[in-house]
Amino acid sequence: MKHKGIVCGILAAVCYGTNPFGALPLYEEGVNTASVLFYRFSMAVLMLAVMLIAERKSFSVKKGELKTLASLGALFAVSSITYYQSFRFMDAGIASTILFVYPVMVAVIMATFFKESVTLSTVSAIILALLGIGLLYRGGEGATLSTMGIILVMLSSLSYAVYIVIVNQSSIRMSSLKLTFYVLLICMMCLLAYSFTSPDLHLQLPPSPRAWFYACWLGLVPTILSLVLMTIAVHEVGATPTAIMGALEPLTAVAIGVLLFGESLTPRLMTGIVFILLAVMVIVLGKNFHLRTIKHTISALVRKTWRWKS
Image (cartoon, rainbow, N blue to C red; front, side):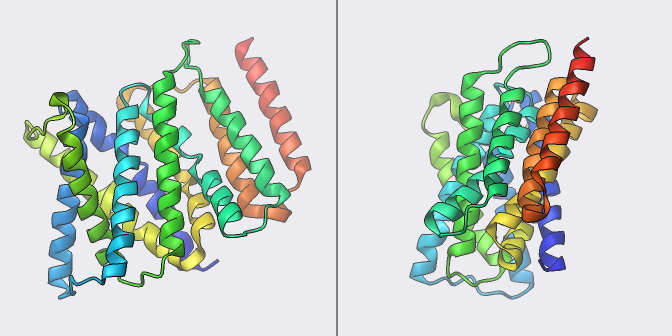
């Protein structure tokens, strides 16, 4: 792997994991999901347009490129809408952790449709990820999480996985800034159309300077920085490694949820997070990650969880 791709992949994951930091304060001020997403992407589009003009970059695209960009924009819109809607059904930290199953989805898609070899480490990673999600299915006091929330996050994860695969497999070779600009412009148009699907989803202006700050934050950090860095990483190291480096997304989101929004971090949730991150390590290290290591890690987790309960 190239160092540039690794660094960009890690930074992209950390930036994307800050979504709850911007979204939750806007929800607290009464801004609905459609408005939060619309201002997130409209701010990002404006910032990117200024950057492209400042660098004197051309805005022209070919017809074939526009079709791919339209697909990417629609996929990102679906992923964002379902992800943000899930915050209304479960803690943001848990939603962001479940979203992390997308690296496994990327690996499966690449193996099924692009003939990447399916190794024992890939199968082990899928099993571990599913175990992790199973542990996350119940809250800290035993209350079952919303099934609708689980469905929304899984749909968001699948959409994002397909997005990464298309970026990796497409023949588009434009600058990362320009690609991100058009993807977000199309995404914003999709969200605008989405806002008219129900009277409850009308667009609202940010009600305070604080709300404008968080709208700008969403446009810059988890949108522009995350997508530009992710695009660079995909082109440098490939789709599956980039997705795997998303391990820092749930860690970032859970840390924000616990430290800033008072969300609970239970032993069960911690164990689920470890299982999912262990799945990532299996994919990262491949043949160098022995099944004996998995067995010992799971045994240690079971013992610690039993001590916590007792």
